[in-house]
Each structure stands twice: as structure tokens, then as C-alpha cells.
Length: 490
Image (tube, rainbow, N blue to C red; front, top):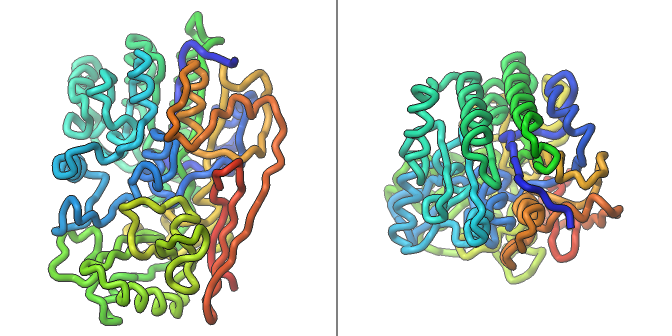
């Protein structure tokens, strides 16, 4: 069995694998050259940060862990507003009213704690993302630092320790140069240098943030990509200085990709104009609305009074809109949704009790943006037109970075086309530490993938009604289907 003494995980939020090049990210590109790179690794749907983070932590899709969107209407918790999983207070409210964890599935952190393994996290994302990577960090006796401050972590003493040693938390600037430098110092000097946990994870909020607001491949974004790459180089150097360097496994990953936005389609306003009073998920108030609508380049539509005839009317109306790329509804069928022409939420691993009545994905294509990167799509707003977005099923949103290096590469560097994804990260870490994965983890250890060839088996589905046609492709490994690409058929 391939084992490691320690595991170090570095996550670059939103990083597309086709942007890991020697000019943009020389350290990561060199690392990939000497490691085992799962070039076709995939995220989950929705390809949003908190959904993906929960899948990394649990080794499972949303159908198992229950985080069905960055924001989602959850009347069991509150009927007053749409739950925002980036906010610590919303998570606390949910857990208080549910009387149980919001992420109920067993996590990597839970399993490490059972086996008396330490786990330290340095995070520069939202309070919700910090929570999701190890929801029960305090109960597990683990350590999670958030650059957002004491209120953004379940182990606030970690922030106190860091501030005492490294000084005040950095000011928020865009791009996040100061935060990147600060969290890298914390990770290399305090976590790796002093704490020396069994598993250490750092989560960079770049290049995701700059992709959104500074655009993919812009001058500012290229600069922050070089900065996070330099940070990765410092982490590698810190590991190489250790006497046990050869026994340390290193995993470099991203949670999702991004595509550039090409225009705006305000779905909430359009639906209100069509006679369905819509409350935006970001408004923090329902105010007698018929439906709630979240946005981005995809979103959920919830029927506040549960009238499924309204849901069906909305679905049929959306199919007549050029802005719509895909539609999903819950169904007992594994492929086709309850409304004719829609796909089933089961097909994309979203069939949890918390799933919405209707999911839409705005139209996207693989056309090149102004910088020559493939991937363009509509958004409901939230970022400037031209800015990056993710959440949908475009192949460039779904394709993620997943590279096994150090003691985890299995002695066989190169590119692998093996079906894989973010749900495999936790099982791989556990395997490296000779810890059995819980049955709830749908991912698999990638260590074995280093020693055998794979022939991916692709399946393509299509449905629609009238002029509306949509397709979705997956690559299958055993019983699990990794999402590859979906969109409107023209």
C-alpha cells in the first residue's frame, strides 16, 4: 500500500487546468510535470464554491451532503429569506433550528479525528467555505484559521494565535496580494514549521476572486496568478527543507473552473414580468413572493406555496427563452425530469431532500473570450459583464486541477485520463494515511489510478420539447458519473 507520513493539500479556488502554463504559473506547471496530473478531473453540480468545498470534505456529491447551492431556500430553517451559506450566522441559524449539522455526511475531518490524526486548515475564503472544509473542526480537536477573522471559523483561537505571531490580519484589496502573502506565511511558518499536523490544507481565494472582477487572463489576474504560484513555490520549498520530505504527499487542486460572462439575463425580473412575483436570493426577504430565485450563471427556483402547476408553467415558459441553456426538475427517473423536456436532478447528483423544484442553467458556449480562452456564457448579474462566473455545466467550469505529487504520485509522473474529480480528494488522503474511507464517500482513492490504465466511458443524454433541446455528457467510473459538459442543442 502507498502511504505517506503527512499530506499537504493546496487549493487554488477557481483555477482552470488549461491556465496552468509555464508563463502563468511556472511553479505549479513544473510540479505538474513531475507529478501525476488527472487532467480530466471534474467538479460537481452546481459548480459553486461552497457546494464543491462540501464535496471535497465529504468525498460525495450534493445528493449526499445536502449543500445544494451557494444559496438555497430552506423553509425548514426559515421562510423569511434564502439561506446564504457564505454567512456564518446563516449556518449557525440552520444548525440551531435543525438540531444537527448543516453538512450531515461524514467528512475527512471526522474520519481523521476518529483515528487521532491532526488536521490544520489555513483559509482565505468566506466563513461558509471555511466551515465546509471541516464543519466539526472544534469538536474534532482540529485547527482552522480564517483570514476573515475570529467570527469566520469554528476555532477562533487559531486566529488569536496567528495575529499574536504575525500581526494584524491584512486589509482586503483586489487582487488579493496581501492576503495571499499573509496566509502563505501562516501556512509555511506556523502550520508546517510549528504545528506539523498529519494533514495540512491551505485554500487560496485566488484566482477565483480576480477572475470574477478583473476578468480571466487580464493583466491584474495574470499578476495574482503569478503571486499564488510563487506562494505555492514557497510551500514546496518549506516541504523540501524537511528531513521527511520524501514521505510527504502533496495534492494541488481546484474546486471548479470559470468561464467569461458575455451578457446579462435577469431571470428574477423576467419571471416577475411573466406573472410570477420573484424574490431574489440576495434580497434577504421573501415579502410575499410566489417564488424565490437565485442567480449567477445558473440558479434554483423554489415555489414558495408548493404549487407544482406554477413550477410547470415556469418551466415551459423558460423553455421558450433563448437565454436558457438547461432545465432540471426532481423525478423518480434517473435521466428525465418531472416536466417534459427537463432533465432529472438525479442525473447531476442533486437529488437531495433539500433540492429545489426547478433548476435553470443559462446559455453558454465554448467560444473564446477576448483573451482567447474558451468558455462564454450569460449571467444574471453579480459581476461585471466580461467577468468570470461558474456554477453551470460548461466543460470549462467543470474541469478542475487535480495533481498528486511527492509521496502521492505513486512513482509514475505524467498525465492521466482516468475518470476523477474533487470527490476523490478525501478518499485519497485517507488512503495515503492507511485509514479506511467511510461508506458515505462516493469518491475513490486515486493512488491505485497511478498504476493502471483507464479507458473512459462517455455517455451522452439528450432531451427537450419543441424548439428547446438540451444535452448532457458524463464519464462513468463504476456507479458514479462525473459531469463533463452540458448545454443547449442548437
